Length: 505
Ligand code: AMP
Image (cartoon, rainbow, N blue to C red; front, side):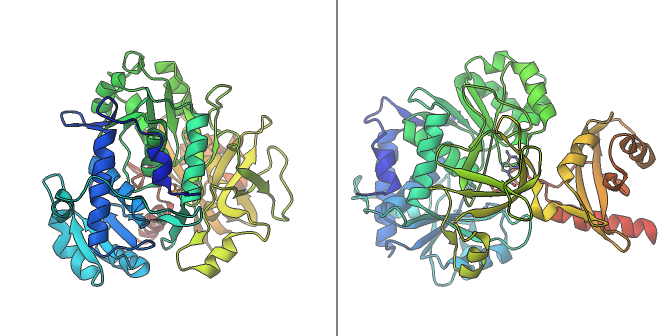
């Protein structure tokens, strides 16, 4: 049977102009029949440019609804969609093009001169709001295209991991991986044709591209398509939506917006959060302000979504819910024994959602899977008594000080609860005595003067001495990537420099 993801989506589209697919504020309304026709024309244009099934199509373009048609065109032509963060610069792009060897690169018209020399063996096509060579090539192509039949294990996409630690690797995702996760999420989150998803996420990442758009396509629902997140615009648009998916920063920014409240949420049925930890404090404040309990879920590029708080049933702040149906999730201690609730261990997952490996990295792939086929996520977590998963942090962020393990998240929660603290990040810095020294970087609330001494004294009353930061640094803001993840590698460099300059002025 044909396992092409587009074929699955297509069976849920409605025909004709009655059902919009995307509504762009102050812009066009795009219907499902237009989306299908444009994806056919782009598929013809790709094929005419020499693309065959299995070829990689690298895409670095600003968020525009036509990018969704391009993504679908790649699926239809049996090609592998390879989206790139719009922030990537020359040296990063050269690495991605060299590693993935795309047949075609699609970029903004104004970037063509920069991109072409970086991808000398690829054909460069352009797509922008005001036109581009892909649009020209597709203009007179037929509105129909016979979608290539795909096997479940054929690759549909390669997504480079966000690389907050180490070099970015290409995660290969199959039609089966994406389809199985999409079907599960539509069911679990109750997506129906009448839903309107407010889409303000970037579309080069698993969250905005797969989780959000797949739920919509598979339900034949529609989207309010925003080019970026702006709390004033989102507050104004929410009364036209029923669902929003966001990173935690969306929620903290909405809470900081005075006009945001119950009235703005009157048509909403669901708020979903993921990609980075949602502070329990944000969960509570959001419920108090709007009456909605944010549904937090946990996933990653390599696996899609693994766990989710329930649609109906208890959503617990600070947890990411139980494993999704079909996902086998275990938490193991250092000896490989399953952890009892409350004990922290390494999270491993297995299921149809889990990727087959990293592009052209068979050795690394082998190391990241256990002999019985579980993927080592690199995340540390624990079971709650209810059988929900709580994420404690990344294995690589674990601090070992004087031989003892310190989980940054635990210390961050204590610090965040202190008066005058807006947020914090805890890292380990090399230390001659301890191996690593627990170090906290704190963002004070506006107008608050905090002292290192006072914070350390307050923490000493709450937690064991070895967990208390040896040093505290203050910053106006934490460095985050586009998905709201704190970039601890940057923070480590910054903190090490700051401490050095204090010691040797
Ligand atoms: P990415 O591949 O960019 O989506 O990053 C995946 C990583 O983000 C996971 O391995 C987790 O470390 C983190 N992550 C995703 N969702 C959550 C969540 N709800 N809470 C805590 N961390 C999360």
